[in-house]
Every structure is written in structure tokens, then in C-alpha cells.
Length: 171
Image 1 (spheres, rainbow, N blue to C red):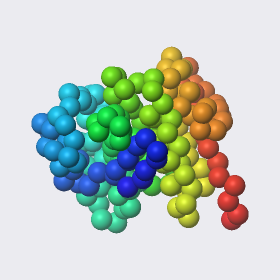
Image 2: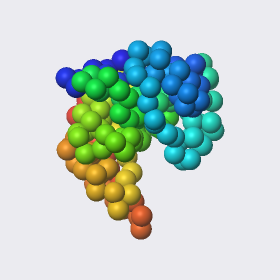
Image 3: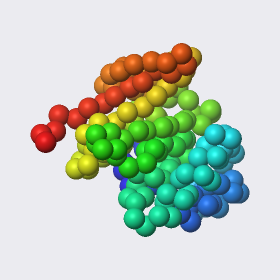
Image 4: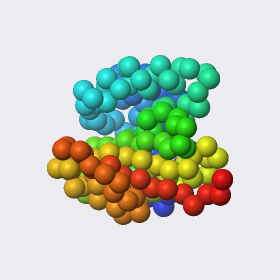
């Protein structure tokens, strides 16, 4: 579990991921939170079913790099978004992140704080030398989170900007 002044960020276990997918508030109940009206995008549901759950179940992998981390606002006592690593670090020591804030909580800096503490945690892992991300060019709120956390733009495609946060680690 990670914590900031405003947030608690919890990596979900396999059983918690299954509750998360149900959308029946059993996960909120487990965490002592009030019921929520959160939804799961089709893209996230596909990732949960096809990648996240199988990787979390694979005991050879570090599940912290495979699971969804849920973000809880301390003040509101509610889940406000999620973030994840897209698998373990590659052979260059790069790990990719993805994230999303629930619509009713957007624009309040929650994701900026959450990404900040997650990259601090990642920097303490010996296998991680950089964190990378991709954002849609038409989503300035998403890439603003990265800019505020000192990511540098490394490239682009027709649709996406590519970003990187590199640690100053001695090899």
C-alpha cells in the first residue's frame, strides 16, 4: 500500500480484482468504503480478463507489476481512480504505466499525486530504470499528469505521445 497526504493507493489481490470486476460494491465493502457507481471501460475490462488476472495468478511474476492499484481519497473515503503497470520491467529496465480517474473526480489532481507516489515506489525497485507511458494526443489532462511528474516526451505517433521518466541510477 502507498500513501500520500490525500490518497491511499492499494494494489489489488486476485480475489479483490474479481470483486472489482463484479461492480456490486463488494470491493468497496471490503475496504470500508461507501457504495460507488464506478464503471469499467470496455478496454479496461478486456485488459483485466485477458492480461491482468492471468498475470496476477502467475506466481512466477511479481503481481505488483501486473495488478490494478486502486486510488482512494482519504477526505472523501471513496475510490477515485486506478492505475497499473503494464507488466514487469523489460530488458532495458523500463516499465509502462496506465491510469484513469473516474469522471466525477477528474480535474482535482488525484492522478497527478497517485502517479507521483507510484513512480517513487517504482524507483526503489532494483529492476526499474525508467517508467514509460503513452497518452492520446487529444487528452491534455492525461499528459498533464505526466508533465507535472517530470516525464519527458520521447516521441509520437499519429494518435499518441510517448513519455519517459528515467531514474538516475548507477548501473
